[in-house]
View 1: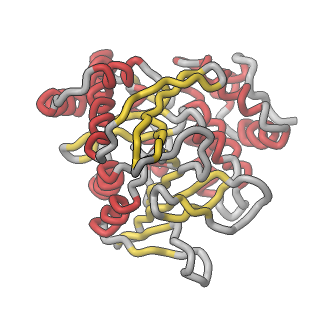
View 2 (view 1 turned 90 degrees about the vertical axis):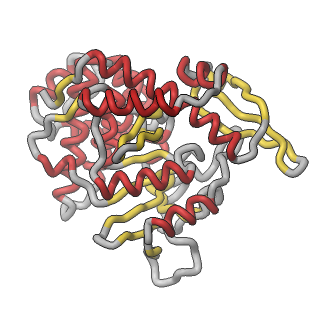
Length: 349
């Protein structure tokens, strides 16, 4: 087994803490001077919450998130629960919550407090994998400890939105990057465009990503709400759709972070592993390790999530299916057998 379950009390405490942070999310909108009203819209049969307000005489609509009972409760009753927050945070850490190391925690804390995740950005990569421990009430038992180590923070956001616009936090993000003493890095020789990556001393990178739409390109994409540019990546739109919120712990603080749906994250890792160059062997193995651990948990606990994610992937085309199945055949056979019984992934022939 690739994971260990935390005590049942963890789930109860965690749900309560998430509810309190949902309230903090709504408070953040008020702190930004965005007085307005909340509305629920149905998109493809799913309810999503939006925040409508007037800005300089023009009506604006901000995306808040998919409607959940936690979000509904937070909207219905917004109140200060600082002491309750501190008490639950302490109890969760004592019960086994995952806490980021000092450097990763400091970076994610600054980004969160700047409003990056309130603006709809999603944490992807190894740090998202680590955060699933809190969202799923588990601790990973990796066979290779390297799968839990990362020297970067990958932040992804769509460059276009069908309904509403994200919260504009470019000034707050610029301040956060300055506090973190980062230096901008450009991927090309020209530095006319805004950078997609920022580096701290010690080679810890903060990189901004966005889905690649249309033909393959190396041209960066502007994310005006964040005030940065982003590196476009193929297949990223799949993993950003249906992102969920989880609570991250860093030092004595806790804050909400958006992470991909765990089932989509697992399948995306299979695709990414297949697409990597042969020279990136270590990254390919890390992708497979993350996918394998999540697939193991999904089959045991939420097989419907995996089935839904696979059905969505199949609609993307045969190249997506082939890439996922090719990598699937490289993970340990016991996990393969468990997944195959669900009637989703099969070994590539």
